[in-house]
Length: 113
Length: 113
Image 1 (cartoon, helix red, strand yellow):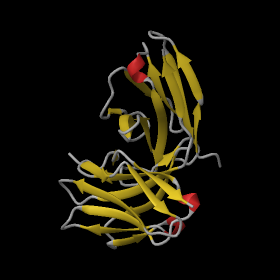
Image 2 (cartoon, helix red, strand yellow; image 1 turned 60 degrees about the vertical axis):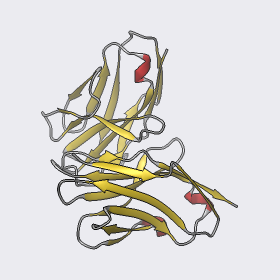
Image 3 (cartoon, helix red, strand yellow; image 1 turned 90 degrees about the vertical axis):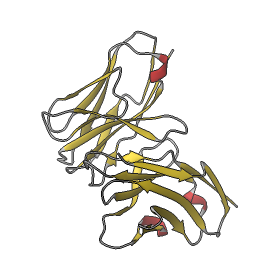
């Protein structure tokens, strides 16, 4: 049981480049989330997916897009990376709603030059 | 909307001393409250969770937290700190909409020998 896995672990991009962060969970959870973590700001929600086929914006969605590919996978895409998107990105999943325990992946450390 | 305030971005205690990490929340509905811990270069893991069943919640590794509605607080305590408790701790709330968590900015706990 791997839990929540994220790829890649590290990435360096140049301004304007695009990339997709991958997330998968093997716990048969319905809900999945993308957060970014910046020093002194805690975790901020970028997008979430309450169930397969649905996605909703969180607190800081600008510059990002998401795809809930199936029940297991939830990807985050940066179409044109900016230095302000330098951050650590965490994917999480939970059985259903926001009241359930969320399980986190190990994170992706992204630097945009 | 809901919010979380964690007082003190850094807390330092001696090994064996009491640990007290403060969390105050605001929510327009009865909240669900969480404490998560993040060890260096890892994702977050759940310490404990309040879901209105009992005001004193016991978690893993000897931590506990007490929900005080009148003070809108959910402080985390541990009677005796261990070196292994050194980590960053996040308080989070699930409030109106119950869709996702809102995190505080985190408190880094340092344990001195």
